[in-house]
Image (tube, rainbow, N blue to C red):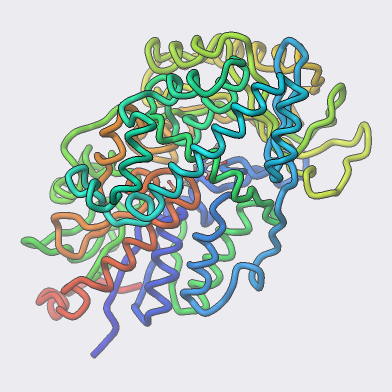
Length: 512
Ligand SMILES: Cc1cc2nc3c(=O)[nH]c(=O)nc-3n(C[C@H](O)[C@H](O)[C@H](O)COP(=O)(O)OP(=O)(O)OC[C@H]3O[C@@H](n4cnc5c(N)ncnc54)[C@H](O)[C@@H]3O)c2cc1C
């Protein structure tokens, strides 16, 4: 009997991991990707002769990738060079204050003592202990679990986990909870920013997102060759196991016959027959019917609010004034206005926080004074890339405000046209259809939101979902986990053993 045929739509993290694991199991895998390289949001831009990681830059939860690589008979270390970063992030404020968080907790506690006060350092240590308990309570029952439900959570959490969440107050916002932990508003701001890792506002995200503090304490890593090297590596491993990648091929329709998926139709009209399909685009595209009317049934009907988008600058330019580390955050004194602008007024923030990833730093290598270095600068933005409010003037103003704020914090950057490339929500919307440029699926707003993401299994037999808009949510490791969950669900499904009757009559459909 010939191998089960799978089409994976999209070579983002979720799609790549599904393709790799399914090809490793001997399935006949074809990946169709609208773009021209693997990775999706994990992408590079070329500026001034330098390749700059212009998507995700913070690599955490390496255990997810350890497991994925191990599941296909290899290891992360033997395929990629990765190193732990001693400084998790360097933070700057307009008043001139600075704080490094370290991989070593004791060093961070000492740094907070000096930055704020001994009492605040004690509160910080208490916060880290709570974040650890929350992480440990939720890792198994929620993060690793396939499609957890609200009703099922109490039994999954057990008495201990329930106790941790009750103590935390699961209905509280992250911002509220941080206000109880810290008296120094700068620390509330610093840890509130973790909500943005899920594309959300600290004022609306649930307190449970403080677990991200523990995720970072468990290690932030640098991937040699950039995050894009990780995507390339997954592609190479999948190809070595027989997966075929078709780039520059947008899927226009997911073909469904009765209750069963039967393949895909590409934008060029070609039809690919498949016993199963894994869809790695945003579920909003399914809901909006961009993959055909029948595939709509695979997405939850309710459209939840979009997560954050971003304006980014990929730069190759010298820096002066302050010494950057790998991950740098520049804060303004009015944090609330950023989220009011973005989520309420749906406009670019007038007082943005600026994140800068200095990609040649952090691993011991030094950057010679006056020499250009590779930077990704990012400012949060509303996901309105499909609207008409993002004018060039508004974007220019955002650029000026962002870089003057950074300059007030001490960092001088030269923004010559040849040394930087700007990307805004309109570009992201074009690359990730139906999203408005939202980079993290739906916003994690309110305590129920985490349960509203669909799981890997859909009501259409043989159609599976993977990616940041699917459980367990956005971020490179989480999207990778969703890819694993889609592969596992497919391998466990009756569709694996049953061949569609249409297989025999697939007519003009080609497989590759
Ligand atoms: C600027 C930026 C910074 C970020 N920072 C971080 C960070 O530091 N750490 C972190 O963990 N995460 C970060 N993220 C989020 C992280 O990148 C994403 O959550 C994750 O990579 C999403 O993976 P995915 O599986 O959803 O696939 P995606 O990256 O969304 O890729 C989906 C792919 O599917 C393709 N596709 C969609 N529809 C079709 C179709 N119809 N036909 C063919 N192909 C299709 C798209 O072209 C795309 O390549 C960041 C993202 C961005 C953009």
